[in-house]
Length: 171
Image (cartoon, rainbow, N blue to C red; front, side, top):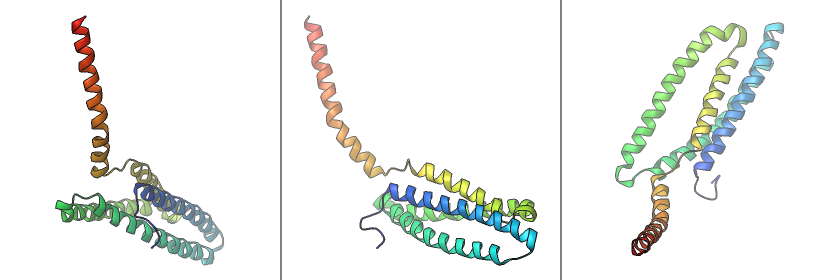
């Protein structure tokens, strides 16, 4: 096991941030190696940057995927877990389709000058957005636990307000 505990929301943010940084660095590396390719027609640097970047990304993506799969099941209401998992996979497929369309459009208009680096920068932007959104993930179980913790405090406040109202009525 990579984790010696169950993954949490913080792990989603952490893996998304690492994926963002890796894709950003890969985009920068690819951009400069592509400029070198345009100047010298030597494909060695471009190929090396691309292959090394893909292998690093694959390793990080595998960890992210495992974290996401665990959390989808963990955050699900156990009475409708198959529906939640199905929605996750449907959303994933929809995101891949939209990403494919966007990247195809970007590649068509930028490949001659930038190679695939613009695609990588746009991908990094989406990863940054996902990192920021992931910071606000909470499970319903956690919300319920926090609500239960606050109930005694709210009840105590209500009792104090009622007592204060009674004292004011007497005066």
